[in-house]
Image (cartoon, rainbow, N blue to C red; front, side, top):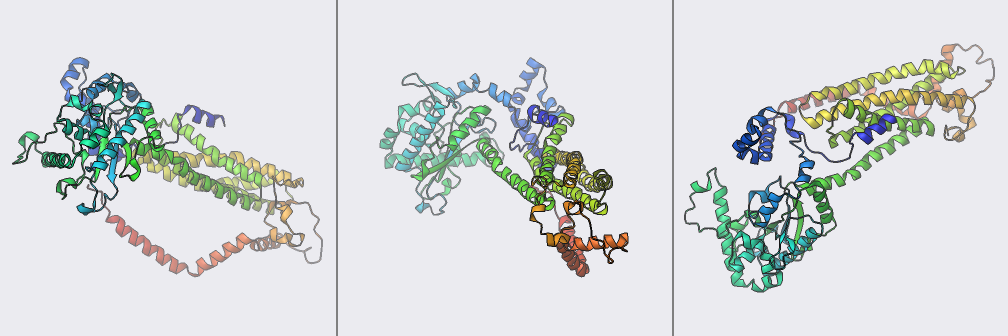
Length: 596
C-alpha cells in the first residue's frame, strides 16, 4: 500500500491521451515524419545557424543529427508558458505582419481558428448553395467573429494591441473573409489598416456597404487571388520562377487561400462553401485548455446554422486532444464494467464476499505496484494511453488466478476432510502457486518479449503489462492464499457470517450431496452413519464417490457437455483450425508496409 501511494503521489501519474512516440517505428514514412517535425521545430535556429553558432557556439544542424532531442514529439509546456507574453510575437501581431504569414497557420504556434460553412455546403450543385459571400452570410460571419473576440478578450487568451479609436488594448481581428472585405471597402490593403479594420468598419456598416456590385467586384478579386495561389503552390518552383501568364496580380499582398474552399476557383457562379478565421491567440498549455473549455461551453459563437454553422480548434488540433482526454473517463467505464463482471464471476464461484474482496484487492493493487517499478526503477516516464488496456488483461488473469487458488483449496479439502487448515494449505497452495506460475510466466514473457519493438508506446505497453501480470501473481500469493487459510479456519469453527460465506443459507439439507464441492460442506463437523454398505469401502471408492458427486454440480455438467461435443467433432475442429491457420498465413505473407 505504501509503494502504491508513493507511485501515484510522486510518480507524476495522470490519465491523459498521449499520442507521441509513434514516429519511432523505423519505417521510411515515420523517419521522414520525424525529420520534418525536428526541422520544423528548429526552423528559426536553422535559418540563423551562423548567427546561433557565433553567439552560442552551437552547430544546430550537427546537434540535430547527433544528439538526442528531449520532448521532440510532445513539446515542452514550460517553454510554452514562457512564450505566453512573448514580446516578439506581440510586435509581429500588432504590426499586422502576422496576417497571412506562415506563423499564422503554423502548427507550432497553435493559433485558434474557426471553420464556418453554409447550410447546404455539401451540395455539389453550385446553384443550390448559398455562398458565404452573400450579404446575410458575411454579416453573420462578422457578428460571429465579434462575439468570439469578446470571449477571447475576457479570458485573456489573445494578443492584444492598442485600439486606434480609444487606445484600449483589444484582440486584433482574425484573418478571414470579413477582414479582406473590410480592406476592399476601405481600399486599404496595408497590414497596418488590417489591425484596426474592425473599428474602422463595424458589422452594421459592413452590411450596409455590402451592395451587389461590391459583392461582384470582391468575388472577382478573390478569384484572381485563388488562381494565383494555385499557380504558386503547383510544382516545386519558387514564386519568381512561376509562369503566371495573363493572370492579374492579387491585390491582397497578404492573401492566404484558407479563406476559400478548394471548389471555389472552379465553381460557377462563384461560391464559397467553407471558410476559416484565424485568431492571434496565445499558446501556453493553461490558455489552450481554457480556450477549449470556452469552446465547449459555447462561448465562441458557432452561429448554429443561421445562416452559417461553425466549429473551432487550433492549428495543432489541441481541442481535439483535449476532447479525447475528456472522454477518457467515459472509456474507463469499460474498465469498471470489466471489474463488475469479474466481481460477479468471483462471488458466484467462491460464494464468499470475503474471498471476492481479497481477489479484487489483489487485482487493484497490482496496478500501482507495476507503475512504481515502471516509473521509479525502469525509468519509463512516458505513459501512453495504450497502457490502460492492461487493466482488462490483469482483471482477466487476476480472476483466473483466484479461481485456480480456490479450486485447488477445495480439492485439497476433499482429500483431507478432517485435516487441519495447515495440512490443507501444505497440500493445496504449492500446487496452486506452481499452476499459476506457469500461466503467469508465459503471459508475462510474451509481453516482455514485445519490448524489442522500436515503437515507443508499444514498448511501454509491453513492459507495463508484463509488470502487471507479475505483481498480480505475487499479490495472489500474499493476499489470496492467507485469505483462504482464514476462510477455512472460520468455516471449521462453524461460522455462518454471510460476509465469509453465504452458501450455507441457500442449502437444502436433502440435497447436501449435490454440493460436495463446497468447502463448508466438506468441513462441517458431522458423524456419518455406519452401515454395511460403506464399512468396507476403500479409499479409492470414496474418492470415486466424491468425483461422481462433483459431476452432479452445474459447472461440471457444463464442462462435461462441452468436452463430449468437442471430443466427438475433434477431427473436424482440427481441420478447421489448420485451414484457418493456412489462410491467415497466406494473407499475412502478402501484407506490405504503407507507402503513402
